[in-house]
Length: 84
Image (tube, rainbow, N blue to C red; front, side, top):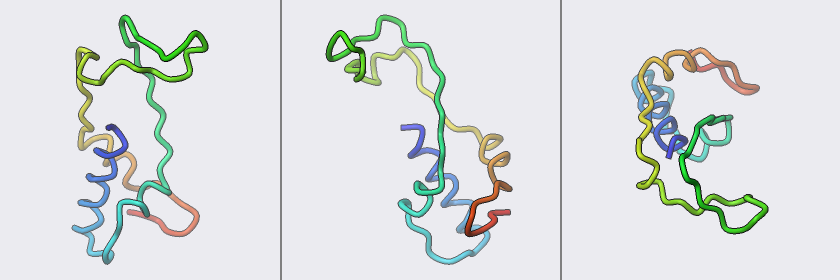
């Protein structure tokens, strides 16, 4: 969910800069996304608590990626290219 939002906004940004055709898989390969959140009354598939089975609609809130987050990541470096 978060990755898809970030991916879409980065592709839009790159289209504005006219860098050529970009696929979502190319963007995803360069992303590292860490999410820190607290879910009230989570449900898991077992006692080891490896897989969360609670549906996203039951989280109580929804995250949307702001333009500020994309601007901060706009000038990040990767091994092959600089997006700035």
